[in-house]
Image (tube, rainbow, N blue to C red; front, side):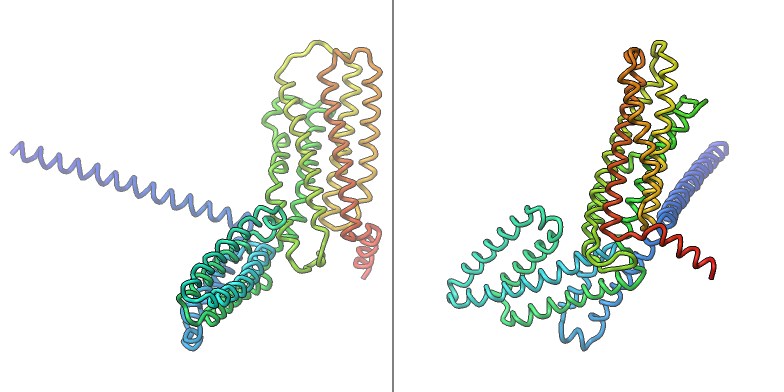
Length: 441
């Protein structure tokens, strides 16, 4: 009897532990699902256009699927209708420019490859049954090799790389299959027609259904980068150079990290610029807009961010080190001048960012830029005449790095001025007149 009770109690304990394990596993699964759902929600909230793009891809695929479902169309094109579906899958991109560059590359590469493949078939056919496969193999070898080598040309790599790949694929498929397929012209026509329909569907959906313009994203990225540079300088002025500034625990301050995203923006900037050059005129951006100037502005912004990185590293190191007593009067002068340089440079960058966002000429930024340059020149003159400079060398290094930032900011201001002239930004006075007229009416 006792043995039976022990067996029953043991089995009950195992059942309880098993049940607890199942409950724990179910809890972990629910937690993982909840965390994944929260992550998806954050991605959607950060940029709602991502949700719209996902729906657009579904819409485009649904539209081209009609070619396969409607029997009269399917009877005319057969299984070639699947090329339209495949085209939507590989061509549809997030931005209008990305979709245009891939769609047009695919369409023209397919058309060109089809013509050349048919011509190669005609030439090979004249060589008889034994010579035809040899001639076709030579054509495939030469054209595939030449097209692949052309991908190493920088201009081709940047704008036509996808088209060259599609050219190699289409030419090889049509040329090789021409040896066994009798109705080659019909096959080439079906393939090009279905691909053209897929490309047209992608372009229609990308342009007319919640379009995402690469040009606008590039424009906003340039303005946002200038704002981040201004945040660094404003934080530097308030935390290091302002009177009664704490100057402690700087390593954890957000303003010393904000410039890092500017340093890493080159890849996305180049991609957006390449896509923007393919886009038609839209909004305030006309056809053949000077997008290349945004790349020059971005390069100057990254140079400025690089100088900020050096300055931030030195300041963080300085706060952790002990230095001998310095000339307090000179330190005060340097601190005041550095504060003026930081604040005026930050205001200039903020004005330049606003000028880009509103597409107006950045005239107010010149005042702050001039003040920062005067402060930098005065500080250089002060340091060059002081005999106790060796005692405050750490202060002089900071001043020198900050003077370099002022020079970089001046170059950014000149670049924005060039962009304003080339892109025909509005005059600030005209903008103010328009605002007055609207308020009066």
